[in-house]
Amino acid sequence: MRGWIRVYSYTRPRENIVRYQPWYLKQGGEWKEMELAEGQRHGKGVIARLAACSDRDQAQRLIGCEIGVRRSQLPELQPGEYYWRDLEGLEVVNLAGKKLGVVDSLLETGANDVLVVKGERERLIPFVQGPVVVEVDLQHGRMRVDWDEDF
Image (cartoon, rainbow, N blue to C red; front, side, top):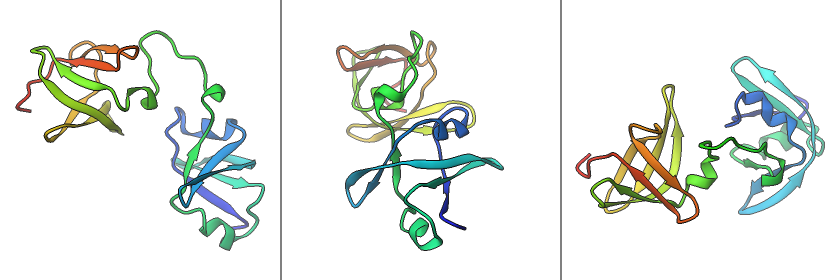
């Protein structure tokens, strides 16, 4: 209604997405800067209205768009914390030295995040620092995991 859109946010808590200004929306393969007029938590999700979006038809054209913000807008992380974007593309090697593949993406689950590692086959590896993820080396683009190659 009146240009409001439902937003799926990866921020924690989810409604923090409305604190970032401006948003960048990916439409047709291109990123476009958009000013957020207002937004709020709505049930378990988030709703928002963009300044350039004042009716239902305009809002409908935004279905499926990705929302991005500049890295400089994000809060500084504590040691041992990572943004998903930092983990994507890392080479994953197990403790035996076997290359398992590259982090393609991450999934959010109720218990913990899960790495989607693509190599000779796809593997789903829980992102649990310590028992599973032994080391994250952003400088060398590598992650060491305690994970059997047959899993």
